[in-house]
Amino acid sequence: MRLVGICLASFSSGFGELTFLQLSTTYPIALAGHSVGYFASGTGGAGVGGAGLWWELRSLGVKQGISLCGFLPFVIPLTYFFLLPPSTAFQGTIGTAAAYAAIPTADPSETPAEEIEEADAQATRGPKVRVTLSAADKLRLVRPLLLKYMLPLFLVYTIEYTINQGIAPTLLYPVPDPSTHPFTSRIIKSVRDYYPLWQLVYQTFVFFSRSSISLGLPALPTNLLGLPALVQSFVFIALSTESAKGIFPDDVGITIFLIFCLIAVEGFCGGLAYVNVFYRIGQEDHPDESDSEYEVERKKQEREFKIGSIGVGDSLGIMLASLLAMPTEI
Image: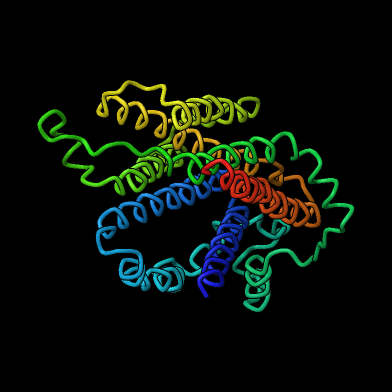
């Protein structure tokens, strides 16, 4: 039953992420980037909230602590159906494109009311054409994404989840002495506090970096999307070497500070790669004013497919990291 619960939680998380990212492509280009940024910031905030909540509940044990969190999944449908505004609130301002209407040549006051109602209905109805992407179309769309977007995201998630699942649990040290480390001794009171602390630090800096677009900071250029994975590889080497050989100073306070900084960099790079990859893909192929109704609808379908397919990169990275983490931790 525990494995079934984990499978359902993982499935709902991935399915929900895919759904919300694809919904972001329905906004005009001026809003699409902001919607991706706000979504990424929300996921980062959820990570901080989850890690912080468990930091407070960890003393209760796994069974009782998880039971107290059982109400959280019900927050999502309540938020979606009752907090978010209905889709009708965005008619005429958000969408792929307004339906084409010829410039009237007659006096508007002489136009019959029935014609005005029909014109308004056509404007709000949206495109009449239906576009379906074939398997060949999808393969053509995916090929340019492999090295440009999927590979950077795959490498980032492989490295950071290998650190989180295979290395961070082994970074355990003696409990700081209050007489020599009065600050850290207030935070770490047991050896079991180290791993939740590392996760809290990681999630906090993921939140900061995933909020970069929402805060108005410039996005990474496309040719630098692989930089976070490169930085994370150095973090991986440093932490794995410390776990295996103990290269940091014997002073537990200094060691905790160094690991804090490395895990902060790891989380910041992970969040930075995530939000920038999805931001960049969401800015591609938006319709022009000169596009026909068919071209507008086709570009909408292509954007929706591409931003959904990018998620394969991080999913494969997480799966590979899970396989690597088991022998790494041992």
